[in-house]
Image 1 (cartoon, helix red, strand yellow):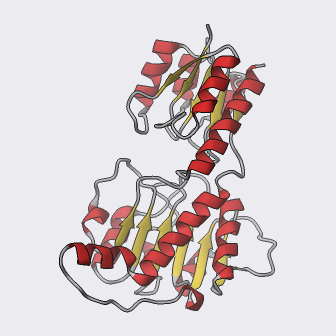
Image 2 (tube, rainbow, N blue to C red; image 1 turned 180 degrees about the vertical axis):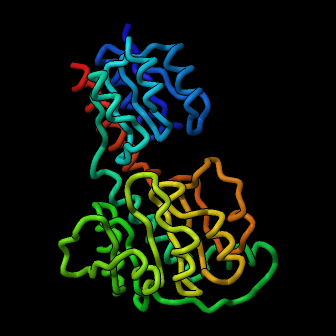
Length: 302
């Protein structure tokens, strides 16, 4: 029986029905035994062990080396997610391995997480919670989202959804993008201009390039809030931790990290809100993503 390998950390947990769909289509399903993001070596090990015809991929590195070594049996790759910069597309095309993704499904959950992080930081929700648990009753004055200028870095589908939600709260929204943004409600600026003007900087760009480093952080307002729900490494984590510690930035709200699981200096600061790459982790979106990914890979294999 041909095999599909699912490498996301919890495939089928929110949606057991998707496992039955795979079986009904005539495939056996193998899943990630580590319960976390795989390394390139671990992915290769699983591919060589199971020799699947299809890969339901997470965010692990599906490199040119991986694809070449698996090309004798691997016939299709389906990302369970929208970002697919972790897949070596040119090599996949050369090997005639189609690559698909679940576009549109993550716009709402990722945007809602980014919004929740902004509100948490503005009103110091996590800090108040930690204080009370430690026996400290101390009120700390917060700020309204309606009074902020929100800078959206990367104004694709998710960035546009974040802009929409922030405007619903009454915030002013500005953006920076390599492409021209056709939206009369959002003023487009160069990145350095956005850094100097925004009270909240939220990253929703694609790719893996570091967009915000020490030079950009030096331009920001002392109480600026940084949100990253896009890709780890897009904000220089060491430089951001230093800016937070020195009082040159206000808050960091991070759902993604250059190395996961994360154990770096941001975890030792009080003015951070850190989550374990949960942007897609709403039951509704996980179900929709897994269903769409299976639909995509079955279509490509057919």
